[in-house]
Image (cartoon, rainbow, N blue to C red):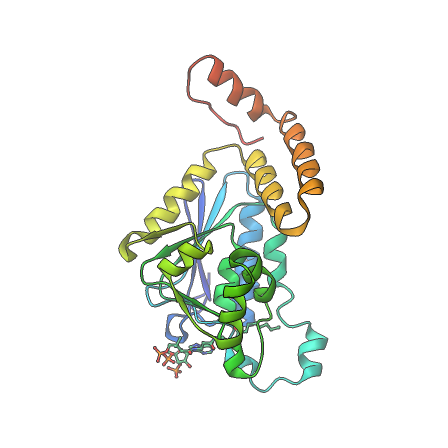
Length: 258
Ligand code: CO8
């Protein structure tokens, strides 16, 4: 890894840990960060030894948005021809569960990156916002869709039209994050949650993620059909045999993640 890597990549047992590494720029998300982050998560997704990934930032900022300095002088044709930031969407097509550990600012693309993860665990210092309107643009990495589905129209409109930031407690009440913990515990809590996920069957965790993800994309009737198909397919795994046998035999399952 080069010294100027925009992300730091480590493993902790069966958990992959990715730390955004542009602290002086409050982890502003530039093209290099996108490429390196997507490559790191793609490699973990394909690695049978890794069952979940934690994405985190610094104490001050998870990420303060897309890199404004990189975008400022772009024309419409530059953005359109390059399909600017389309690659971020690749993250949402990967199957491995992603946990965001958010301290400090998660603004604009930073909030959108957190929302591409499956669980958001927030420090009590976390602040979420979509301030793009103040820059003369609107969210462009999925924020208008994912925030609205996560917190509902009223709060999404408030945040996106006024740029109002919400703190961790409001984010918890609104359903944007699943847990709020003291700042000095947030990474540990996220690694523990990811470790718990990674100890289960990887293929079955992927099926479960896909099933919940379907609720975001479709209606209940179709979603329940998809869920049933995915549920049936869990019976094709060795881990289903092991998990159920372990219950019957009153022992801890020994998953082989296949
Ligand atoms: N981009 C580039 N640099 C940034 C960014 C950013 N988003 N945020 C902070 N920085 C830099 C600052 O320029 C500063 O650099 P320098 O020291 O060289 O001047 C450094 O980080 C520290 O920042 P501040 O001095 O501003 O720190 P403060 O504590 O005073 O303020 C804030 C912290 C409030 C977070 C402030 O930095 C801020 O408002 N940042 C911008 C937040 C923002 O507007 N984010 C949205 C960006 S737009 C976006 O994300 C669109 C996503 C969709 C794009 C899709 C395209 C298709």
